[in-house]
Image (cartoon, rainbow, N blue to C red; front, side):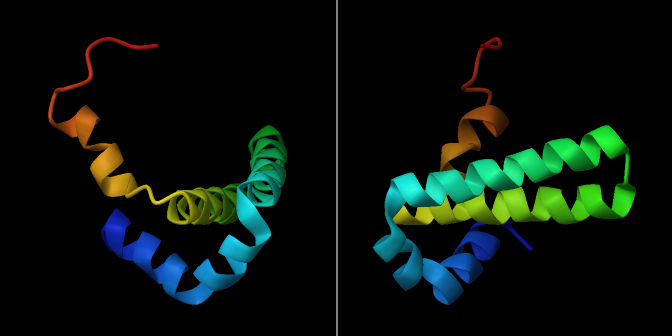
Length: 87
């Protein structure tokens, strides 16, 4: 599945509710998932790491959807050698 397909899947299922919740509250859900990923990484639990990476990515897509950002287009700067150096 392409990133844009996954982002569209998330939008199709959740965008109405996500827009009602808004960016600030959605960002808090995203941060909670990042915290759960941090715990999974610290515990070195492979199954839980995979689940939490998926959750973090889903919430990132949600944030992108409600802020009208196409993640696949946004990350093209990395594949097209437009990104020079590291931050």
